[in-house]
Image (cartoon, rainbow, N blue to C red; front, side, top):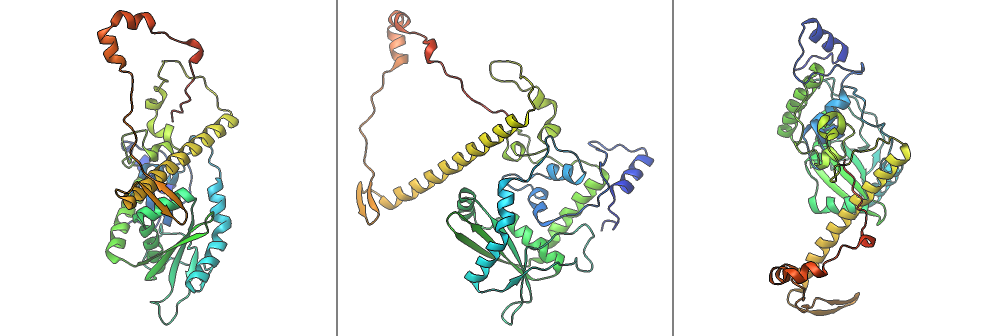
Length: 347
């Protein structure tokens, strides 16, 4: 087991006193004790799409992010709708919940912490009190969750709070407010999984204490975890600085908040479109499977057509150039007025 004293200062002092500078060592930048919370497991386990141990390591070391981090609108939505989701959960399930501060049970390491969203009140039919973890999601994230189900990140978060309290079961409630849908999931305490989690967290805490950088989740700076990481530039350093646009032009420096916000909004809109396109393709495939070989089907909500189209006809430019090179060169033109500027954001 790790020492109960998890002060950055004490550990750093020992390292410096011994004259040891381990590879990848970064001096701590604050004096806060280490705390591992429920949401940290996405990073400790390196889970898709945004989890990375190195990102969490920077955060726990108190390293300043590349740009100041603000409370986002989805975060605000989650905070404001937590009470609404809790009431909706109780109405749908007829399970009584209440707010409650919980203490770390005896025998658990001091770095194990966190706050439960709600305490599920024990009844004669339950195995003692339970944990209720509440989330709110936008439509696209909710649809993805429906496809994937309660993945390891959510399971680990519930197991974390069971470890913290000693309670033996928990539930996950996810509210999608635009369609007013509620997902409810259930999980029992898994001693074997909890044991593995404690072991992995102990190794991570030790890395934070000693200033030893954990392995990055990917070697690709375009990975989703890296694109969304507030420590992206610190992590990749000169590799990103050396990156240039396709035409070799030097990038002009502009750190204005307005431009940063515009880029963030563009990225958010682009990602939402990609999510929507993926959902549309999935819905189309599902509809096509149900249609089978039928080309026209009438339903109470409308008529569905899935017809074969005529084979397309295209001019074979390559073949024409090979057969008539002189004619091709005579009539091929570049039209300056038809040029367009392509917008590309390199993160």
